[in-house]
Image 1 (cartoon, rainbow, N blue to C red):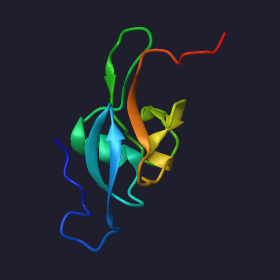
Image 2 (cartoon, rainbow, N blue to C red):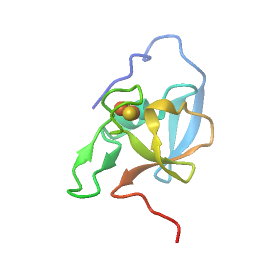
Image 3 (tube, protein in one colour):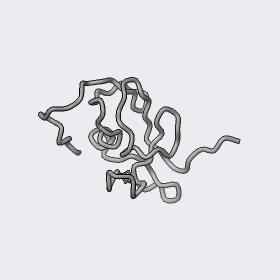
Image 4 (spheres, rainbow, N blue to C red):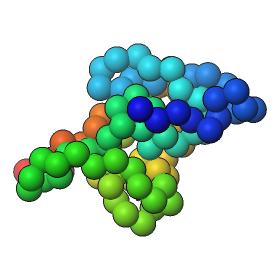
Length: 99
Ligand code: FES
């Protein structure tokens, strides 16, 4: 599993977020991708082969960090800072489209 470079360093205050229905401690302003790496090691499953993908570039280029954040599918989690009370889910498969 991954370890944050912020462990033991100066960082934002601790906040609680919901990750797949479970309360999880995070640091305000760390990225959601960082949180997903620490807790799961992956962010999503691909739509075709269901292969696991993990955040890779951490700068908005690879799209391997897509997650469902506050109900919004296909959000690049590496570009989303953690905020208290946010809801995060790993994105498994293709994005759901409203009919
Ligand atoms: S980790 Fe590459 S776009 Fe988010």
